[in-house]
Length: 171
Image 1: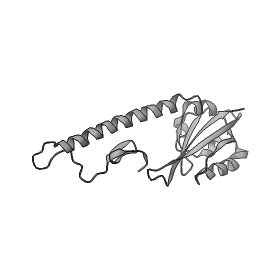
Image 2: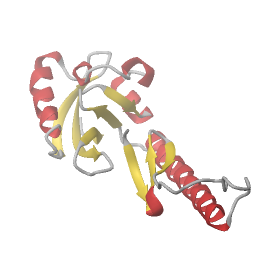
Image 3: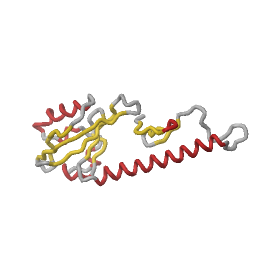
Image 4: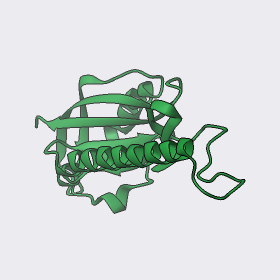
């Protein structure tokens, strides 16, 4: 599971679902099938955490969708998993055309191997900070983009599950 946030009391957001990791958690008292006070408290905490998750997801989704900067996310296999509208404008490619495809499709063919080698360094936990990488538009024009990136870690904070990058066209 790819957990993005950890809340107090053991709540985790994993693949957009909220899980409760507490052995004693139960909504209903098994003896008389009514909620006891402890379970009501836990149910309320779960409801509040779910509201917090929904607000955080909405905020992040709006930031991603309406940012003027091109933003891209790729997985550990260097396949594109997210592609915002600003990136669509930069490349002339629609998100649904590139999701699941290799990052290589974004680079000029003569720079593809060099660019991918630099990107693969990110798979080792390195960050790009103001690095120029060329991107090719579907019409063949080249764009010079200044990139910043950061790894996205799992809940343990030890394993990279994806990388997010945002760029600025300096062509």
